[in-house]
Image (cartoon, rainbow, N blue to C red; front, side, top):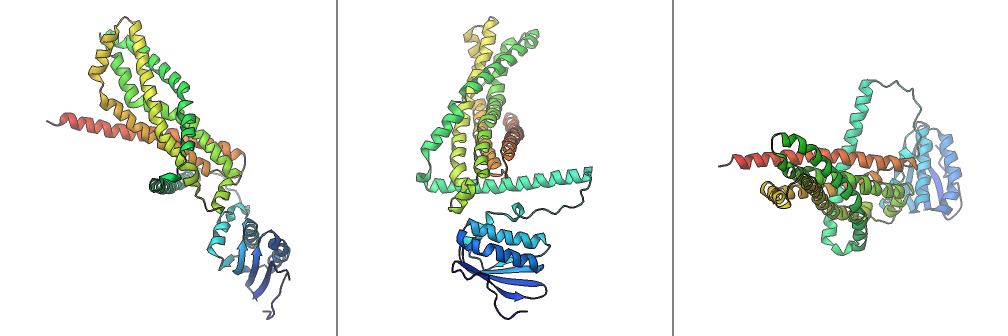
Length: 389
């Protein structure tokens, strides 16, 4: 073990010295500023020393007084050299603020994976990987839900930090500009259900109940579900693509470097806008779906007053409120999932398309699953109410 210190650079910007060079450990001490100038002085001598050492590496960073993104990449490259050679790498005494910058560059994105023997996939491996990916995705969703809840709570305590103009812009893009497609789909769906129901119900002399049937379906189920799916296709996918592009362009990393929380800075306004846009579109969908049933029944010779009496007799405010309650939840769900998939975007242009697809698919699955839960709860409550004396 050498007793003298070996200095690789005499530059006052940054330098390194050997503290220990034993049989199984090389200990270095890096001093100075790890910025563009300092890293330029250190990169070649330190990487050569680590590559030639062929042993475990420990770096003492207690004397580092500056470490920007260039310095973080430099430290990760030293780690790559050690790990690629099958050795351990450890950084000690790095200041917490510099450690946060280092966390922006995960080791998995720098250290290449070892090429092992690829095993042919079988049922057990496939099911295991799918299960693990599902568990990991659920874990990420729970973490994101906690971050979003904390961000919303912070905004409630500090409402002046909300960008109201941005919320209105998102509301216009999600709700106002979505009126044509939501109206068209709801109107056509109401026409189809009413037209298909008239014949079978007429056999039993109950064709006037088509108004009740279509309105009940639109109020409780199809109004909020169709609107949520359309919102996922239009707005949720747009959020995923927008935030995903920012992630690929390293804009989210820049926000973290500046000390800004991406969830509070990018997600909160979108979720709030979706929370109000979804009920607005749902009411519109309910009206047009029920109006389509009126059109069909008027064409079959029924008077408007008779249809109105049928509707008000069997449908009440509770049916409308059940659909509205779902719409508020679906609005948060769709916008939240879209933002989450955007934040989860990996490197590469194709990953933006993958995140967009994942946002739409995940939203639709969660919409249907949560609607089943809502329906089970509401059906149980109605049965309990009816059975009570």
